[in-house]
Every structure is written in structure tokens, then in C-alpha cells.
Amino acid sequence: MFNSNKTDKTVSTTTNNTSPAVNIISEGTKLKGNLNAQNDVRIGGIIEGEALSKGKLIITEKGKVIGNISSADADIAGRVEGEVKVHNKLVLRQDAVIDGNIYTKTLVVEEGAQINGSCRMGEGTTKLSQSSDADFEKGTKLKVSGS
Image (tube, rainbow, N blue to C red; front, side, top):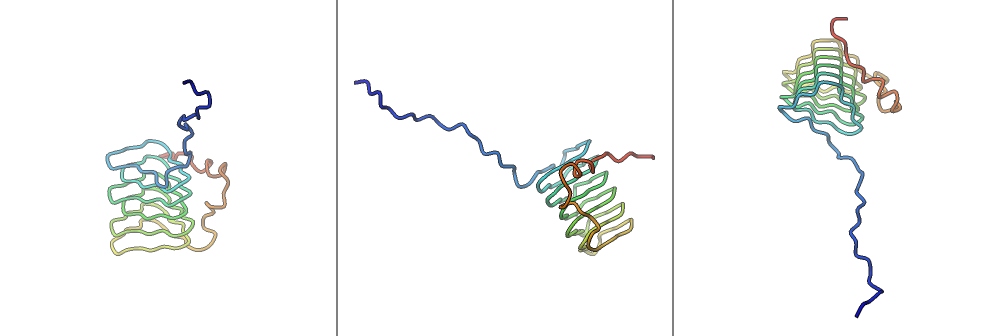
């Protein structure tokens, strides 16, 4: 009647600790402060501060970053008011507006994109993927206006 050999049928409570492949700042979202991501980032809203990603940084047509950006790869259709550092390939779509200097290995510019600053290209312009996490965090200092 009472079986002492019952198997335990409890549900495992362990969770998968893997991060999502893409972080999203949606349209209508405004972030004041620095964004520091280990994975890809898609920005459709506004960031007032620096945006750093060890993955790909995507800024949509409605997206805007007021501050420096740094990433392994980038695809920009929106606006950046600050320095752009991309270790590999930077793509500027036709609606992109960059108000600052660009440092990248490879640059693709669609007709209509605007660059209001200088551009440096080639090997060694940025070393984001070679930096340690401590170096990565040091690069997130907020840009001070008016200095």
C-alpha cells in the first residue's frame, strides 16, 4: 500500500545563465549614462552617454547616441554626436549622421550619409577586441561637455 521506493519527480530549478545575443534599446526609450555590453546592441532610442559593445552595435534610423561609441562592428542609420571607434567594419547607411571623428579598419558609406569630422582607417586604429575587461570599463567614462 505505501511504497517507499517512489522516485523523486521534482522539477529542476536550475536556470540557463546564457546572455541574450542582442540587447535592445527600443524607440521611445531614453538612457542617461553609459552602456557597456559584452554582446550585440541595437539602439532605436536615445543614449546620452557612451555606448560600448564587444559585439556589433546597430543604430537604427530613429536611434541617437550623444557620446562616444566603441564596438567590434557597427551598422549606423541614425545619429552619433561623438567619436566612433570600430575595430572591424563600420557601415554608414544613407540616413546616418556622424558628428565626430571616425576610427575604423573598414568603412562602407552609402550615398546620403554625412560625416562631420575626420576619418582614420586601417589596422591598429582601435584595439577593442584585444582589451581586457578592466580596460573596457575604463573606456566608459562620461564625456564632459564644455571642457
